[in-house]
Image (cartoon, one colour):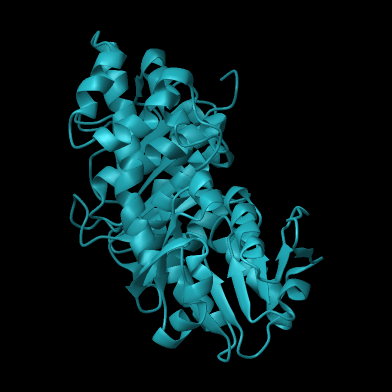
Length: 402
């Protein structure tokens, strides 16, 4: 028997394919949903109680951790969990540590959206121990072409690597079309020319959305932003820019729309114009950047560091003091536009020594007291001034009317 946990846009179609392939399937979803031919369980633990194979298809690492924790009391010794969400290799390793040792784990995220899920033509990127992959190979084949990527975590890593190219490419096209509009280039003609380049396949895929508006949700913009947050790496500067663009679009209320909604969002942002902001409440910049920029109701705040009015490092060697200085600067910049930390949608932190993270975390929790925003924290070898230990940037959604 197979247990399928998570019946979103993709999950419901994938569970249906298992039923159509003749498998006995029990399903569970946080918001009760049914799949014809499958038994609907009242809880994750009930859903997995008789299952030899447990498939999870959920939104993010937190959801996977929560659902599998609820399912754990019902997991049979010898069961195999096939994690098909996009959660990244670190979360897969954490799951392995949390699951009982007698329960197997395969990470098998997919490439493709709603129609391939319906047709069984997804690409499944599977990672795991050879014996575990062998146990689920036939079942994974129901969903489409199975590509075994390597050992545990390899499928999850491959998925993020692929999305780090595909998602920014769509954002780049959105910005290209906005540039064309700004300079008087005909959109249809630009799409025709781009269609004759190596970008042609992607251009033809998104052309209907550009001409007629976003597709019905196949790959939610908010999930695309989440995937790029998970894939964050210091080397991925283009992907990071695309991530921030998508986080801004999600903050504008487009998170549940299809990723193609980014085309309209970028165009609207261009027409709204961009304001450069340098509040008097924080030390002046060196003239090579602005403390923040605002477009519409989105605020992008530059990385803040612990420098005083004279440009000297504050609290050299003291992470707590530097963190306080940075968070206070961010608070003043946000306040200049009528915001607080509650309006922050994403916070990105660069640390020169990750072992000092707890000290920064304690300061951050004093300033961000509500539900935390999306967050990325990376270790870097150095910042632009010797003695600096931390740099923090944020994106915020400005409340209506401010």
